[in-house]
View 1: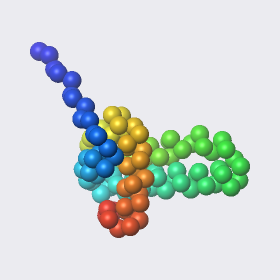
View 2: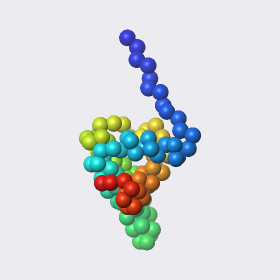
View 3: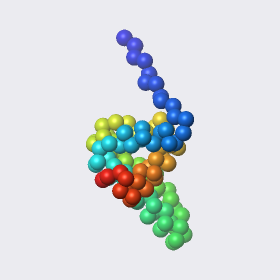
View 4: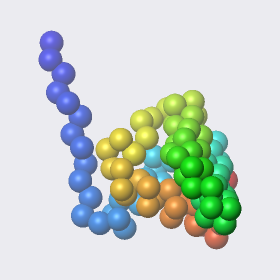
Length: 107
C-alpha cells in the first residue's frame, strides 16, 4: 500500500494566502495563543532594542512559536502553516494580530 504525499497548495499573493491562514486558525484558543506569542515577541523586541540587550533576540522564535504551536497541536489539531509557508505565515501572524487589535478577528 502506497500513500501519495499531500500536495502543497500554492498562493499567488499574500492576499490569497491570508484567508487560508485564517481558516487554519479558526479555533479561538489557538488564536489567543498566537496573540500571546506575538505580543511576547513585540515586547521582547522592544526591550532588547531599548536596553541594548540584544541577546534577548535569540528568544524571539521560542516566544512566538511555542504558544502558537501549542494552539495548533492541542486546540486546532492541525499542522502549523509555518512548515509549508514560512514567510507568508510570519506575515500572517502579524496581520492577524493587527486584525485582532482592530476587532476584525475575534479572540
